[in-house]
Image 1 (cartoon, rainbow, N blue to C red):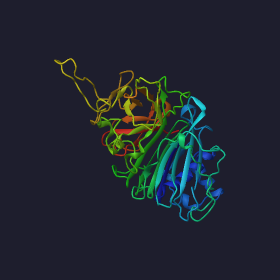
Image 2: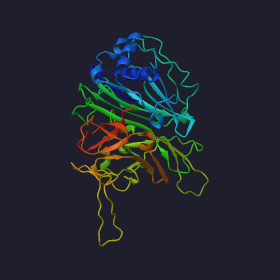
Image 3: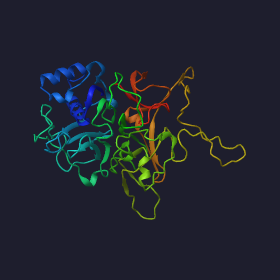
Image 4: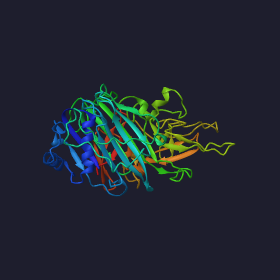
Length: 417
């Protein structure tokens, strides 16, 4: 599912969560016109769509197969309390493992207080009781303010939760001033970002590197398993996601992630700059004991295909030395120079890069996995302006900018389906 919701006035992020939750749970909402007619026919709370610009918004609901949206993906929105303001919320999504739909994981964006515009994220692979399908959403007709029936906010089994919650937005970082919301959602991936403070027909402006203008992109994606210790039987949840600890509103590309070597074992706050984590992994570090611990929410190295950033940055070219046998000789995986091209598969034309993102953890002897193949999204490397589209393999892709912008020619390509 691809969604672009454009507004001419400021929106709180959880109002958009409520709308998206309703779109997911209403198969008849397959385009913007059906969104408007459904909202009118069912008397939605008017505030949710105040300022909605139908002419520059878009909803596409045609994905099938691994990139489609089926009953394996469940969405529920709750007010998460009965406070007098409109800011409490808990939007919870349930996903099934791509290789075993009896195994689930959960992503929840929530605010349990009346703090304006704050939304934090938690992930887990179990609920404390019940199922998400049996939970009730906060009625779409209900006014957000006042002590009204809040719906059911699912709680997680703490032994299966992946650490503490992290902030993805605050009142000073754009989440009370959302103007455009982009989202790609399938059974295997969630990618979204927001333009804040100003309205643009295309949905993107020129303000990046500051969350008052842009937040995200936030990526939560399943990955193909590469390790023999990474299976359902060993309780590994195949989820790779953007590190929430980088700062409010900061998503992928927060500090030119392709230009860095990252130490995944860094123990101080500096480690929060590492762009990706995975839900869990088995430490396969050789040991004299029989214990192979599970590690929750570790930082991981990321890469393009089989080229990773734990030794050299993905943009680094190291030609080595013709006179020293042991020097590094390595080419770049990502190029920032304008007009740089990649060869096409048949070598007949020049083109831009549509590159698969993968992860690994060399210290723990984890080969990791490929998130793009499973999630359907890719890193785009080439000349573009945010919102540009291109066609590949019979699909149309939208290019989302990174948090730091588009100057480095790096974006995230999401399918419009």
